[in-house]
Length: 156
Image 1 (spheres, rainbow, N blue to C red):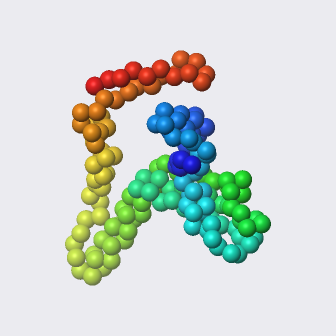
Image 2: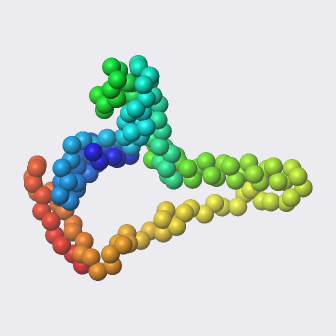
């Protein structure tokens, strides 16, 4: 099983599956991340039936899934609903918490300016080529030539 953000559309899921196969993995299933969390966390829970809501609050995304355990099983067929927001995440909560803290400290007599621009994390604010953990490695650009066929072009 390969997990993907809940906001991934069909095309992104298919590309992820293809990448897994190209990496030599036998991809049994593509599942939204909060679904995988529910499958793992509630696998040994004895309550039945059980309705489960899980969420994945990443740095920049917020994904939610609702599943139902029936007859002792939680499978991706038990998925009742899932969705995600790629523009709402932990960074937004951090920002709101910081604003609240500034208000609290100002109420205690500090003179902090809540109107300063918020810096984005480096990975968001720096538009640069992705860095490889293997500097000498070659990258491959894949292009689709027809349904089901792919061509790889190795690049430095």
